[in-house]
Length: 366
Image 1: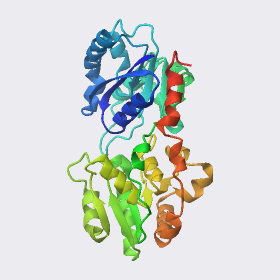
Image 2 (image 1 turned 90 degrees about the vertical axis):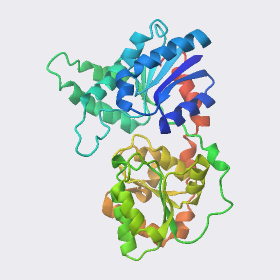
Image 3 (image 1 turned 180 degrees about the vertical axis):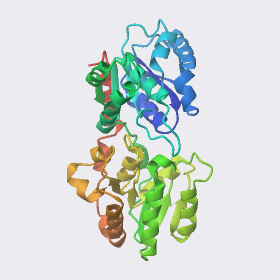
Image 4 (image 1 turned 45 degrees about the vertical axis):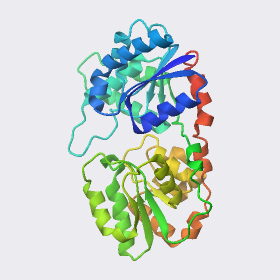
């Protein structure tokens, strides 16, 4: 099958997902992309460029048998602008995230325009795929409230209709890349704690560093690896941490290459998330695969990532519980390093998931 995968915000995890599926799919996957910036413009006007790309690719390589579009696509606009190439073929919508429940930055009010674009795109699609059950359920819990904002003709019946054509397709991971950087043995010494998420408000770095400050004030010994991408000039909480924890830092900043990032993950003993928003959890799963012991909040998508038998040890209820679990880990580094949890991430390998994607996308939505 000839599949056009449309990714107008083609960077970071969106890009890794699209390119990973293209490499592992049995289908002939054509990537139609735009640079990963100006997300509001991508949703408002990106269909103009994407329709041009659909037309050019169809004339060059042949028309698509199916479309897989991400949540940054204004799908009704694209379908209208790319006639006739998209007539009578299955169109799939993949929700990495959504603008209806994604937390707005502090001090900003949510613009419902973008959540409505997501909703209308789902209506226009033949099938909708969410990256986690948490994401799917949270979206459909909120969608009726969005529709009730409108004075009439709010069509609440679409909530049930969209649920009916929705499923969960987890994000695939290219874990084989990390194998080349696996060390012969894990180094001893103080516990090495990892932050490998974005330096952004929705990942809540303030609580992460507050917990480390408390451990440091108690005189406990640990080391710190801070990676992840920074989209702000100088996030205040990271600047404070760099100063207060200076003697404990092994790395601080964006990894210069994916190889450098892999080496940092293999160096880490424990990975922490304090996120207030997470629809899946790619960075945490990559760290787990590389041997890091996870401490994650008992909410969002995280409970789905771990087997139920591990929830008590690895999911914390509140800040005090996080601090207690961190305190235990820092004082028992050998026991932390003795855990072998890489198998948790194995089920998200593209080698395992690509066939599921192929089956869902071909020949028509099931």
